[in-house]
Length: 137
Image (cartoon, rainbow, N blue to C red; front, side, top):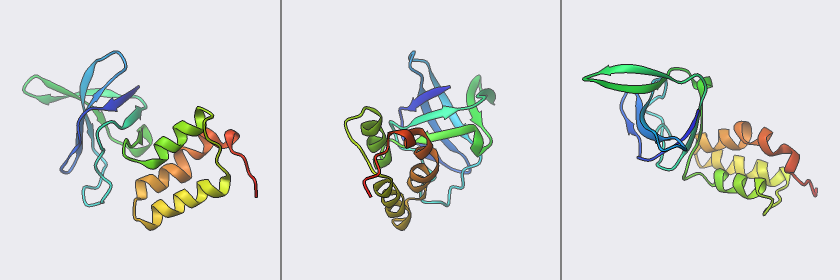
């Protein structure tokens, strides 16, 4: 299941946000494993989420929410992350990027303590576009 967040997240011991699928269906999303003390534990509005094996859980008062209990069950492409705009340019073939540039972007995100972005640069997005890289070094 893929969807985009349409509200900023609310962070307590869980991360709660509202997502919308392509067809326009809207649901509450509850992520149970996030550490609220981390600086990047929130999910900005207009982020894309891909959820493996989503399930609805009754949360009281006639309300249901999609719950995610394990990090391997969700991938988050943050709407405010420069990695996302870069990946879209690479995939659409309007931009070529070298492996060195890709690594530098991940290093920069890490040094700025933007750990979720660094993870996206290093782990989630690199395998997706590795065949589109041009190595000019």
